[in-house]
Image 1 (tube, rainbow, N blue to C red):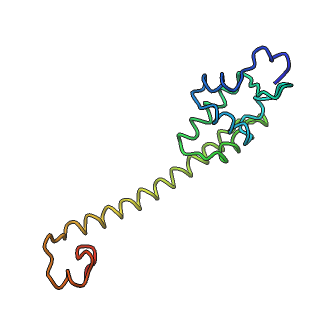
Image 2: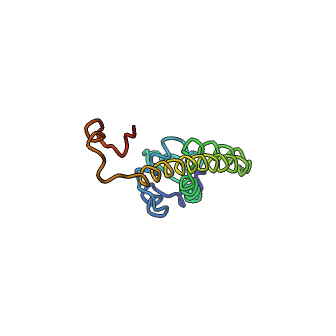
Image 3: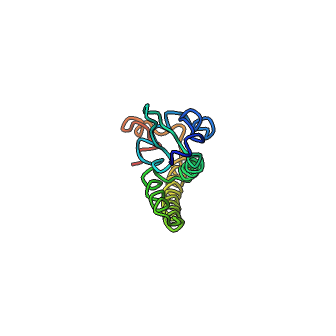
Length: 142
């Protein structure tokens, strides 16, 4: 941030209010380097943010809502900070998320089938022998 922009600089509370994020979150993002090009310290040590930080925080919020980790977001922002458009990286991360979700869906469908099979054979009153040798005869088939 240039000194000439100091009159337009935002303090952390203003950034938090305008972004809808808690002050603690804004500070954390700064501490881990996600806001680096948009923040500097005043002589008294206060964080001073350029108005560009709001766009950066909006991107971070959107990327997190789509499942990107803070490390993935950091890598995307580093590409952007070098002056390059990071859409290729974003696409790669989103495709990876879609693949992971597809695998989770398959696992959940298999679990649903297992549960439905157990429930379809459910016995409210199993035989005494099965009761004596199992904790729950409906789960512990012979």
